[in-house]
Image 1 (tube, rainbow, N blue to C red):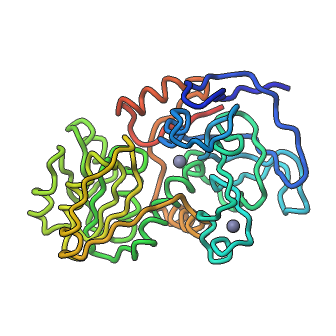
Image 2: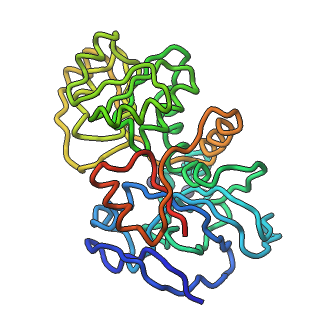
Length: 334
Ligand SMILES: [Zn+2]
Ligand SMILES: [Zn+2]
């Protein structure tokens, strides 16, 4: 049996929709029928060769939800179960795995990088990567519960959390990470400030009702008028980094998630020392933050925002993301 897949033949090449053989069930793995596979900027960076350890030929994609195909009583999964997934497998035995930080496991294998990913119809996953759902959940939300929602929660938790009334600024606020980061900060009771590049994007952002929206690249001055922020969720990277740093209050924290152009930043150490600012890197999510993502959904505090496209329109989806034309996440339907 053949299925459609976004196949990367070698690093640096553009992937293409290709007919590949359906995966054959094997011990220790569970077969899923993909319901939704979201497009992540990491997919683009992967095919451009920014992750040289990626193994080709490779099916891209790591943000997904699916239905269990077959019965796996030894792991507690049955045919038809809908599951959420972590974007990687992990060893379960190392110091990171044993302390709830499986996202840092050195024996981790990433779907769509080291092993085949989800931009296709069927995938084999490790049982430890999946979580069975006991509620009905929007497949779009389920697909990003880990790499987007769980990752943002991981970033916020890792940076000491957000308290009610804290001011939180989100850059790239109309993007797949930004629009959900605003919702999460709001769910935590923060006063939210969205930064975006155009009035048209600002209109879209109004959908999640941030307390303030600032349009334009020079936003630090405007943020200072609001008294500065306790936390920045930096979903863009180098282009907004310095303005973000200057938007922080004394003691403020920056959670770095985006790295769109993979460029170095100019960092004035004096600025972070004298103001005791902290910068936190964020890598993906853990089982713990995935559960938190489900909890916030159950409470009705979060929803998936973006556009659905066909898997076979992968090229168009990439164009939309790269040109900045996409709003929220792009959810690919096989
Ligand atoms: Zn991702
Ligand atoms: Zn491990």
